[in-house]
Image 1 (cartoon, helix red, strand yellow):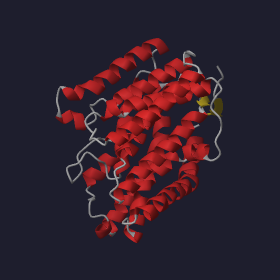
Image 2: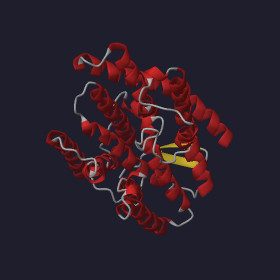
Image 3: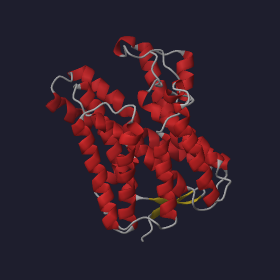
Image 4: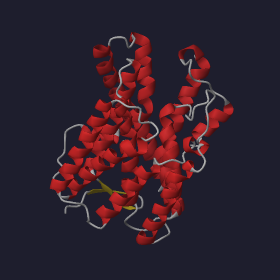
Length: 337
C-alpha cells in the first residue's frame, strides 16, 4: 500500500489524497450543474448528491488529518474556523449588501439582523420565508459541518480506538434523534450524519491500512457511479430518504477512490487537482454567478445556457479562490502559527 502525499504546515504533516481532491472538484461541478439545470427547468436532482460526497469526504479528511501528532481540541476548532468561516462570511456579507441595495434583484431573499447573524454563526434556523436555509443557500451544508466539527473536536483527547467508538455513538445519536421528534429532523438531527460517519470509518481503515486493493476499489467506484445513474433514471423524489439513497453510492465512490489510490492505481489528471483545490470557492459562489447569468441572458435555451453557466461557475470560482480564498487563508494561517 502506498502512502498519500503529505503537505507540511503548522501542526505537522497532513496527508493529501489526490483522489479526494479530484472528487471534491467533481462534487462541486455536480452541484453547480444541478443549479444550472434547475434554472432551465431540467431535472438533474442527482446533481445535489455532490453534497453527500462532500460529507463523506469531510469525515475521511478529518480523521486522516488528525491521525498523526496529537492535536488539542481548541487548536482543531481554531483551524477549522480559519479554513471554513472567512470566505463564507465575506460572500454572505456581500450577498446581504446586494439584497439591501438591490432588493428587486433578489425577490426570494430578505435580510433581517437575526437571519444574518444566525447564518454567519452556522446555526440552523428558519429563514424569513420559513425554509431551513441561511442567507447564502449553499451554506446549509456548513451547519452540518459545524456540528460534526464540534462532535469530532470534543473527542480528540481520546486515544484513536476509544475516539472511534465515542464518535460512532455520537454521530448515530445525531443521525437518529430527529425520528423521536419530527420537527428536529429539519433542524440537523437526521441521518445525513451517517455520511460523515462513513467517511470517518474509511479514514480509520486507511490509517490501519485495511482498505481493499485497487480491483475491489474500482468495483466500488464503478458501483457508486452506476447507482447514481440508476437513481437519476428512476426519477423519484428521494428527499426524505436522501441520506440512504445518495449516501450509500457517495460512500462507495469515496471508498473506491481512496482504495485505488492507496494501492497505487490513482493517476493525476491535468486540471482536476486545481478544481479540487478551488472546490470550496466554486461551491459557495456558483449560485450567485449562475443566477446573475440567468437574469442577464435568460435560461430558456438550455443547450446554450447550461454550458455557459458551468463555465461561469468554474471561472468565477477559480478567480475567487486565487484572489480571495488563498490570500485570506495564507494571512490567517500565518497569524495562527
